[in-house]
Amino acid sequence: MDIARLCKPEKNYFIVGLIGACVGGIAMPASALLITGMITSMTEKYAMYENTGDKSYLSDLYDNVELYGILYLVGAAVIAIFMYMQTYCFKFIEEKTTTRLRNTNFEGLCRQNVGFFDEKENATGALTADLATNATKVALLSGDSQARVFQAIFTLVAALVISFGFGSWLLSLIMLAIMPFLLFGHVARMKQMQGGGLISDDLAVPGAHASEVLSNIRTVAALGIEKRSADVFDELLEEPLQKGSKEAQINGASLGFSSFIMMATYSLIFWYGAKKVNDGTIGFTEMMRTLMAIMMSVQIVSGASSFMGDAPKAFKAGSTIFAIRDRVTTIDSFSPDGLRLAKVEGRLEFRDISFRYPTRPEINVLKHYNLTIEAGQTVAFCGPSGGGKSTIISLIERFYDPVAGEVLLDGHNIKDLNLGWLRSQIGLVGQEPTLFIGTIAENISYGLAEQP
Image (tube, rainbow, N blue to C red; front, side, top):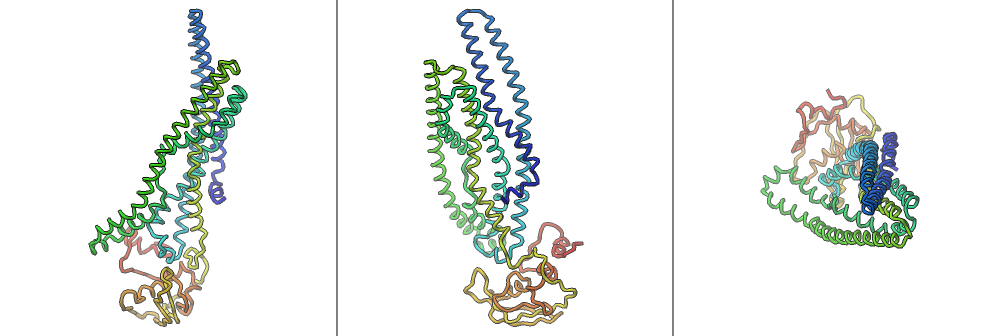
């Protein structure tokens, strides 16, 4: 339902694309009538020429083939127009949906509290990989995959109408019975051609490690642990490598088996069809119409089936995006709620503060901590690593909320203040400052409510 709502603005494109899918779906089995007519005409005219030696039959044969060729060419032009409609409209919907999903995902990440990113499963590498791939996976359901499913439905209906109405109902029933085997063969072959690939979850941990190493490359170089970092990355790739090797073996076996199934099925169909033509149960034209209509439709339906095999991955990716969007955080920088003081003096007070990091709940970083900093006063925090210096700044910025106690600005609990406004009043330069792309002035102005 969430995906459907995201696609709603493009409903007109959906209608036009659906019309294109309808015509494109009907075209393939309908072309079986032209092909069958041409083959039948060629066979009959040439047989009559062979029996009589009259060359007028060859002239008739050429005229008939020319007529069918023109009809086929006209049909190809019409199909090209409607297939363009289908492809363009559904691709447009897919790209629009991808953009909205990425914006939704990124906005959901930006509004999370800092503690969210401290959790191991929310490492930067994993989140950026999901941001790059999840939206694309989900958008497939609204784009090309959806178009192929609609096209396959129209194709299947048209094939059944042609095979039962203009072909042999007996052969049609037999082909319907063995169609699952044909579909299995085609789907397996298309999967093999697409390449199964490893899902992004398998590479999330190695990606997070690579992102951590490269973003802290100066520290890595200073410690001289480049080789060790590369070895750890190699070890993390071992599990995806094993899965990829197993997947390759499975794909190889399934491809060989599917090829056998397809060839055996075709052999059975042609043998049985020829047998019925020979004993006079059905005519040659009826047999060919049925065979061509069903076999052509199998290719289209199997194409849709292979794409829909990715639906579980798409739903999983969608649930990840919407879970982040719907995640309730007590520290929401997007919230418009909270006080905005008309004037800030700058008096800070830590009143009986106790604090533990969410990822290390067993360690008390601050316990019943009290401190008052008057407006205009300069204060330096000194102490060993892990002593709580950065924690105090994090509490002032409200990156975290204390377990107990209050942080007050000019006598107001910072929990009661608008978070965006609060942080706009504070200038913070970290130990290792990060500059965004742009000028120094642009970096300084990022935190202002109204940028110059």
